[in-house]
Image (cartoon, rainbow, N blue to C red; front, side):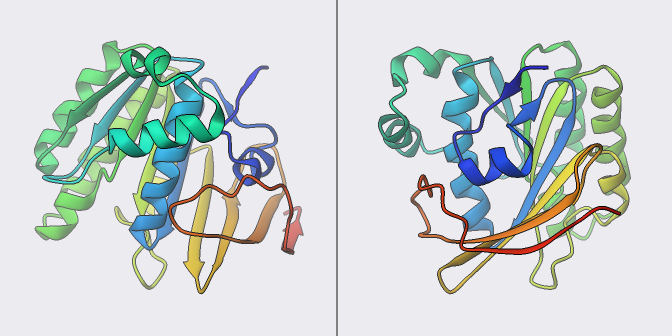
Length: 220
């Protein structure tokens, strides 16, 4: 099966070559700025292969086209060739996000869900967690390729609670501290769990393929 490469050697390595079509992935991390870095890194590389529909769960922020263009130059990707393959929609409230996920059922290509649980968490409306997760699960049952970018809290718990993590086929958790990024594969259908720590400069992709430390790798 052909893999969709992310352009980031450590993500491709941890997923044994990149994303497989028809599966659900979650990449969650702390702090959120590091996750946002990776959203911008990965989008240009995926858009080379497929149409992307991104559902962003925030009132503000979003994709920065200047950063996308910058990383296109780094990866030698022609920005004009991929920009029309990227479609962005927003879910301003938890209820809006549920409706947005429902509409994705009729969309082909790669579906990218950003911050799906933020509004429900910030408003204390945590009963929406189940509704959002349920709609994502329906997409999964349709055989969609889904990539979820989610937050970790300071205590390393993911937004949305733990239940929604049963939906994902593969889960990566990343944490940044003092110049190092720890990337941990904590759920996988077909590979050993893996934990890699690399030197990392926020806002700039680590293109040099050099593992600083391999902390943990085992088969359950």
